[in-house]
Length: 316
Image (tube, rainbow, N blue to C red):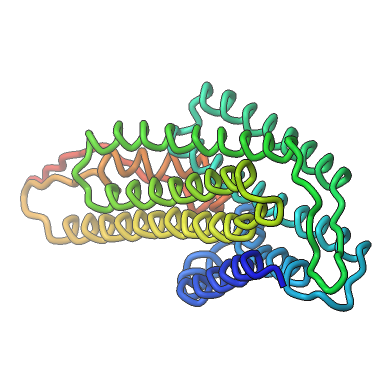
């Protein structure tokens, strides 16, 4: 048994299962009780693919008997392919989140969108070349071992790191802009958690790249499953964060509407009706920004409600 790698695979699986148990109630409340959209599909892929691709790695590193060299190579190709798809889905969620934060700014959409598409295609190319040119060997009585890790896979990791760096920088810049204009504690918490999630995914990707360059060949891929687990966990939590804030917005709108109705029925000779909805920053950030994330929320559920302030006078 390749003990370091097998322990890493088991640790990744335990992380995914543990987080799933912790957040299952949030998933039911925020995702499955809402409208089914393309965002629901993205979430399901991000959330549940690790339960397929991480266990695929277990026979590669934990069992020495019953697997041929050809079987090793097939399992290796399946494992890398599933992990590539999972990380691509997670990055799609991060990119959509960034588009929403910047309210679909045309320069951000074009610049980051083209960069993401280019890097994804390049990473796909390097991954295919890596799988074709790599042999998963099976020494007698030993688990599967990859004979080498080429420069192409490292280049793919570098492009992945570049995209995640861009996402982190753009999120920090936007957080600075919004937090200077609001003292709302929940806006602060939302940005804080989002930035922490981004930094965690960035750090794990950086550590994986470090292992690819400097670790011995049998340990070069030791963090791939852990990287995959963190991408799934943190991106799922980002979706929970988005949906929880959307729910918060709708609750505030409902409370405001009820207050208006109460004021209208109990008013005196003169009264004012406040703006319907939530403060301007919250409306901008939770309304128009999340409309940009129409892939993550149904169109009817992301409408913003806004009405200018009016004054009414009742004369006897």
